[in-house]
Length: 372
Image 1 (cartoon, rainbow, N blue to C red):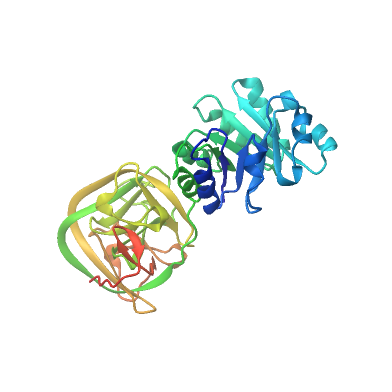
Image 2: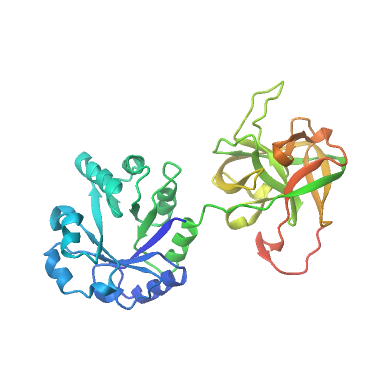
């Protein structure tokens, strides 16, 4: 789980409301340069004091250190954390580094390798320096907390070099942004419980529009997206990673299905294939149920002959998938077995997913709903 730190220093009238929002969403830490902001906080959140530029000893001697969990210092102004820890053995220290040039980048790399907490602010918008710090700190036990200007930047910071920063420090300017940051931190989807589906029949259903979902990611041979005509049952459609005799592989693409079909996106919300656009998110799933969000680069919708695949789960749930009626459109079975859709026969076993709730505008909801 990525860490969420709240910076309350710039806040004024909305400070109390934003702090309550952060506590409600179980933020990991609240940072302030005023101990009065930290003392009332519950023990469920880490209380972080950002040291001012003056005499660090005068600051700490005037503070109830029992109410502070971490003190973030600037080593250039306050001295090393090792020296400070000798004088204040009960205090945990972190360091703040502002990266503006090559020497300060080296300081950030050193801090990320050696300090328990490294709070980093990058002056320039490029994420190359952050990539360098993350690479330099590979295997280190400490945590990197990177300052973000807004939630959109936080989403990028969480994903840099695939590993991302351990956490983000954000100073919201309005209520609602703390909740958005927490959602961004939880963007890594969890594992889905896939089920086996027994094919009962296939049938040619005539012409219609189907959608190829081209992602911005190289998908693996055992990975695709879940697609189905009904919200309560989907089939795992494989990416075009397996060789074909007449065309090159396109490992970023899933020939997904007819445009009315559902697929899963962010927060397990369903989207119609016809709704997907460049920049949309879809859930990539492998045969073990491991998931990751990937970005859609393009959706190609074209008229093609269509094939209906009907299958049933062990609990009797009926599943339908309509795909392009062509041999090179494929679905996945247990163990990563690849089936050419036009060669499916009754009794073949596919992998799928059975959401437990109905959907309203893509969101899960408990209500009476019949899909047929």
